Length: 343
Image (cartoon, rainbow, N blue to C red; front, side):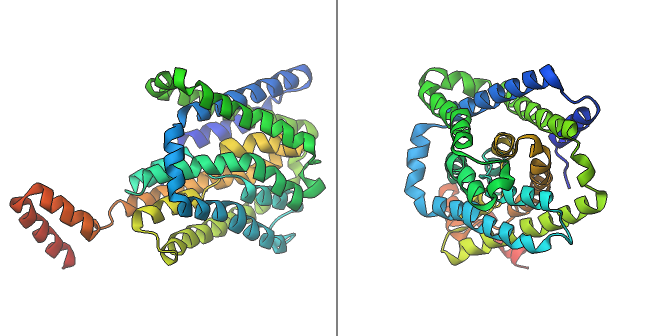
């Protein structure tokens, strides 16, 4: 099972924060820099998303509503059910982080990548991930206020306003600026991808530095981390199963079910980290620990699933269309291949 090199960088950043945490003035500088980096990150997200693609994606509203329900209804319900695991498997702070994980919006990049690998509906995955991120800017803090309450670091209208200013406003600014910088962004995806990841690393360093200064790491033992990973593995398995078979029950075709599974079962590290830093303050390091573990777990498991989905038989309609386009010779080869697979 593949290990994303970026996760190694994240772990290295946590280690750096443990050895050399930012304190005093340097902590203020790091906090300001991470805030600016995340705002720039969401500006780039807005500049990348084609407004026409987003409007076209609204036509497939049933799929997007399904993904939103999975992300902001089913996930939180499972998170609330996990309350019964305290204190046997989880400490209360780790449970709060797990519950926060269930409130975070879906991913964009990995949902698109895995949907493409599995030969699913890529435009739907693009729009579903983007809509989830936009909705999450408002819905995630509201859900955190309702479900986490004062344990969420003192949620208030000011914290919601701060999240909107830090995430939504830059995103909308990126949408406005797309007409002038869209071509530049398209031609420099790799460089801007480094900016994306560097921004997240900076946020991780700031959050875990605050945790070290506050001395909260004595609350987590290896046994508790093991229990957290087991709980998250069960959570991921449930969501992957519900999104795949639920899509079938709702009448979606294979390509749409692939998009629903990968967009509806994931949680975004890029969106969750800045929100946690606002909502949890000095306790953000423990709050984002479940999200970081779940992020790596979902990448590893979904990579395997996407690879297997890519080997699924081509639907009969698509096969007939390809045969008609290719001619009689190709039809003969297709028939032979089908007979061979049928055994």
